[in-house]
Length: 195
Figure 1 (spheres, rainbow, N blue to C red):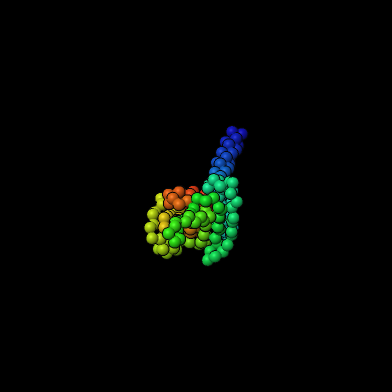
Figure 2: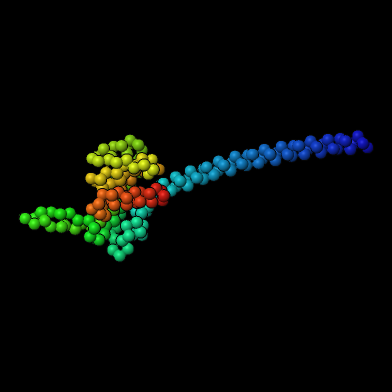
């Protein structure tokens, strides 16, 4: 009887060890598969998000423009166009942008609408970014904005590369270059956040 009991315990002990090993292997496999599934889900979600964006107007709304530029009391005109690339244009008349022209012997103030123009280039890379900023006469690198970014005061435009997109953000909402630059950075950060 003792011999039968010892054999029974040995078998039970072996079965317990085998069950423990099977459980550990199952947990390890499940854990690995779960990490892979999460990685695939993150990649596919990001890919779907990138593919889904067809216009910069999807990233910056009229409400965003009203909030960033504090222009809630002005009527904002929006145009969603494809010129060479998808382009979103916002304009409003608040009297903050003007130029002085000499007509005869008199200087005349010519008012222009404030404007934000966003051009989006899909499937962009460092080479396309570098080609596009060659036209900048006064390039100023902007740190901590996308993969790389540059501002040009003469063009009143910020260009940046992020998530395989190249964006050109033209902001002319003031005669002060620093104000335009600051607002272009705000718009760009919002684009990156939503992209």
